[in-house]
Image (tube, rainbow over all chains, first blue to last red; front, side, top):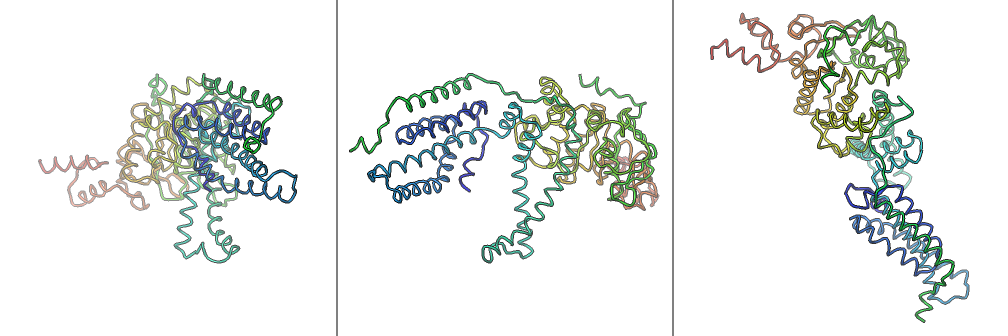
Length: 261
Length: 292
């Protein structure tokens, strides 16, 4: 779960936090594309390193490290599967090259996680909802999204209360084999779901009472405006893509194992 | 600017129900029966009665949740701000009647306080600058301006309920109906909410309908008490008259302690004159009596 912990947004103000979520999303896509373009280790290391100033500027280094640590399991799986594959299907390459290739594949994944975590750590759900609205996603979906985010802590707290209440009545959650343990959670889930349904009815009532659906041309308290920082990031991202494509097409990239020996 | 909007005109009834009977879908018996009442602009009405007497149902009629949201069978007629509730959509009525519910948690949807307060205005398509102006005003009136960027789930129950009040206030309704707004709050938080509500009534002339069991805390603010039982209005009038009447004592309503003390003294031949509604009032009367 620690990987998701690392993706949880915390409200702080930094130049990266105030960037337009659409621009940041464009950056994530660009990173994604650039990482997929390369199988060599040197450009992937470069992609990894150029994101670090962003993380430092956003003051989210600690959470970012947490999310990277959460990703180590998956990264290890990727690394060893790659090794295994080259072992079972030998291509006649040297061992050091095989290790390098596996490392590059892992690094590619790490770069993806890195850019995603920059996005989620620095974009408030409110902003994200607003970006969705401005991208012509129907308001109902945006509302469902922000409301879901808003009720996560409420439901988590409620689940804890129900768990305590059922434990006080003698329910033992940790007992028995796997199947039994799953069954143990039924007395938690049923009240949780029933409460959630009841809650949703009350919510609907409150929404209706506050003029939900009065007009198709809804206004919004906040407005997304592109500032100087957004243009800078957009320009840098475009530059990155152009550079990545150019290098891919015209410059041969040596492997580290070749350079060394 | 606000004063003009909420100008009090006491002569005109803002809520007018005539022979209202309503049955929920699937229910056998009606929840409210033959309810007729008139509430004038600027009144502070306390609506009380035993649980299940139909108070909440009546509140839902005030802004059109009944019959539009709950369906069921509605007979009789109810007019709010001159509009027949059955013929107008809930969002039209929402501009005139604000409803505040019991559980503060389930009436806030946004990720920040100010966004929540803006919700109704956004739905109505009010221009952004106007929303900003009204949201700031509502936040200041309810004294939560400094909380405007906090997420609602981080706030205390009392603060959340204040946000809910600010949210209906921002829509500048003539009437605010509050359905047991303090039952999730501690006594001190409740007292603050009541004081806020009273201020809205006094300063802005907003008509208040407050559903509440705790008459001890609220009787002094109201200029009218309506008591319901089994879906009917059984008593309706000035607090000082209603609370000392014989019927009210037979109904299991929580009579304020000051009234009980007043009556205890009266039975023993010490008439304090007009019935008091707050401890300050009775203390003053007693001091006068004792010559201190």
